[in-house]
Image (cartoon, rainbow, N blue to C red; front, side):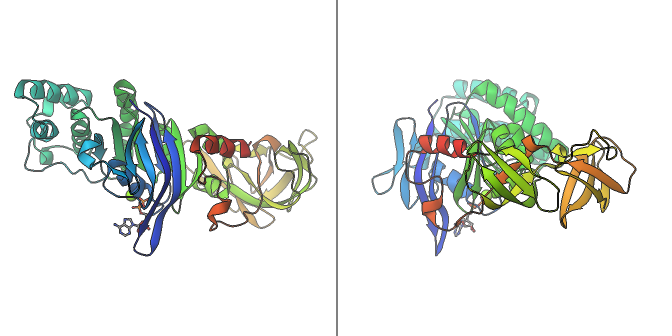
Length: 386
Ligand SMILES: Nc1ncnc2c1ncn2[C@@H]1O[C@H](COP(=O)(O)OP(=O)(O)O)[C@@H](O)[C@H]1O
Ligand SMILES: [Mg+2]
């Protein structure tokens, strides 16, 4: 199966730019997720790959095969050989499971015996072998989505494109469907672009994720990269929960920085590749904040604070406490139940990430992903967060 290359894709809808110079590469056989808030351009990107939208600039290639090059090449959707599944089930209500799945093969005039074999093969793959004769209304939502997936796989696609396929399912079924999709995809090995606005879903199914914001790529990386080394405050805040606190960098050598966090005593040294000093914002994940039983000799002096608990919530497998540091609400999570009206906490230096003010989010020239080769850009982008 080929890699997928998107280069400099821009798409404008009447007076509104949905995609700004979007470039990315999806590797052979991976599940690549487009993650971002509603309206950020995920579906527009997916539709452009499928050939259902024509971008206003840029090119799209499946390996060496250019399927779109603005003004020069536009391969029709039916010749791009993408299997597509949308959020709404979009299987035909008046056709049995068997006929739904067989439809793309019938269109391609595959003979009856081969069609029959393939239908049973893909229905086994999605674990619906026993339901071939049923009609959509006789199936659960999750089963209907699996029929849609079986249909997308029936004529083996070069690319599987999934647009929020599980968002209509209830939480438990959604979780099962994700695990199930991951196993299926590993088994079939088809290059998959998966769209979701749900960060848990993105973290759990993806080999790599592109975080999108208002039509631009903010970061591309593995789930661990994105979560542990977010490229900017948008990514830190959108993926998982981040406490964001004002701080000041007093010294920086390109490897480490000395920082002082507003409302906390002393300075600490944190890993940081920028040499600029001055006001910054830092992030720390709620689960990385350390809770001390009481302020003792063993408690680190710098970056430690005792703060009143504003409220706490019991969430089954963990608890979440809300405290304040210099009037900023800070979430702290722990698996240990603590009966106290105040907490002594410290912020471990290795878990703190430092962000300088962005110069502008609107000027495309300041975006990390511009018109250059996306592969080198991905690396630069990645290096810049270390
Ligand atoms: N056919 C269309 N006509 C006009 N505007 C559109 C159309 N499709 C999408 N948009 C706009 O483009 C932006 C991106 O939309 P979309 O790609 O659907 O976002 P997402 O899938 O991330 O929620 C949104 O602001 C949306 O309103
Ligand atoms: Mg969408």
